[in-house]
Image (spheres, rainbow, N blue to C red):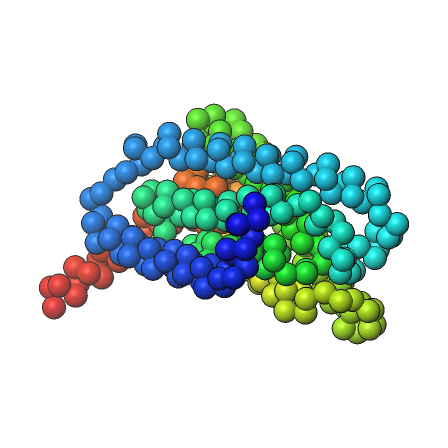
Length: 319
């Protein structure tokens, strides 16, 4: 793996930037093409490939998590540093020892996750919304976070790898299965909550490290840039996620009132539909997952927006 590390250390910033920019351009072009061709319907062709993709991503996440876990645990058992020291400042990168292989796979997986967006676009889950903007922003930046955590001396970099891969085991498996067995929707909210817990834990540990080093002057010879970059990006993920979570919950409440009040609301809140699919997977209101990533909306919301856009285009054409 030495050649990989050398290659990405020398030109990592440029290469990550190029991939992220290419992703962003692809999103703009692909969504424009789909919007200009409303008759195109790929749902019947993407169901199986999308499920296979999600299952493979779940397996890859399990491979990374269970591969890195024993190494982290063994290293922690062997060190004479306290857990508090390692959480605040692991400036000797003790818990990253022997993790280069797993960090490489973690970094590569962030590019494989771009495929999530492809399925969302093909299934027309790309209507302008808080969820969709979060989806694009999330995938535009995660590769850079993984790269910084890999090559910079960042406290708790090991925790980011472990927590993210664990969440993705569950999340991708859920979206791989729910499209074929809707009974799985009962755990939909659980998937949302574990991702929120991950964000809270990572952001909390990052801010704790910042507070100890910047306010209480805890001596730490780590990378200031790396620590700040990971803290800011993860904090922004949490903010975006909470904003969308709130907007999505409000949309569900409005929808439940239109469907008949308390009975419809209880159904939406209790069966795992909508919230998890909308927040994490771009699934529709019936649990039709269209990608294992942040973003998406229900079909009714998207249909309404598409109809509005088409009416506006027709109105402009007539004038």
